[in-house]
Image (cartoon, helix red, strand yellow):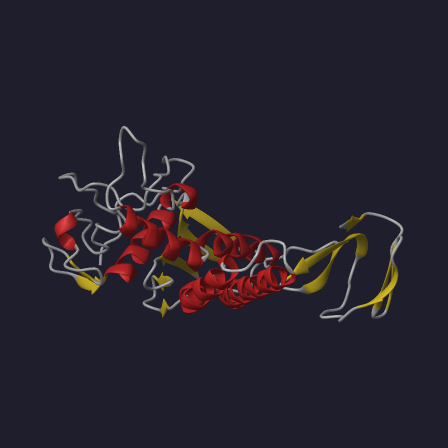
Length: 291
């Protein structure tokens, strides 16, 4: 329910039209001009979202440092300086319990009191999963936005990457189960939300988020620029077949992302691929930055 007018806020109380005064937990100070109040139910609890309008003075970022970030499934984020951040995998952690609760729901008569009670339990569990992910993303994005003036990320199209592999009756998909598992892992990480949070938090602090073309970032050597699928020895190890440079595969990709961003080849000048990794070819693209 959205209330654009007729509301009042008095310390820890809110007056809502046709409802009256309602007490609430004031989690933060309310600064600026209140424009509207939205009441929602999340996990069995009622929440009040208060939208305010406030003038923010955007200055120069306190830091001059720049960094490239490669997003992954096993490792949530690899930085070009070698730092690696593991994700919380909140959905995977609660997946078995969620399946049990949903089986319980399927055995209850739809519309009954027990069915409604079980629905609330499942809603609470979904809320717990979302809260854990949101907490992790906010803390990480805030920390990065404070330390880095410019952050380069891949301009990935998450919707296309997490599309179903089922296909059609005429053209059935391949490895559907494996793709389904990958899709769950991609969505569990919250890449899009992380990128969204980084964008506005960097802007507030005078920084900038730059999306670069993901083409060849996973197969290209960050040292000499040689590009080949054979450079990926394994999921985690990158070893260039030309110069012998060895690095963690995700860190190597993050270094490429940083270089592509700094040399001006951002997504505005190059078409962003729908997929993170393209089929291997024999072309070599040499970066201007040497080891």
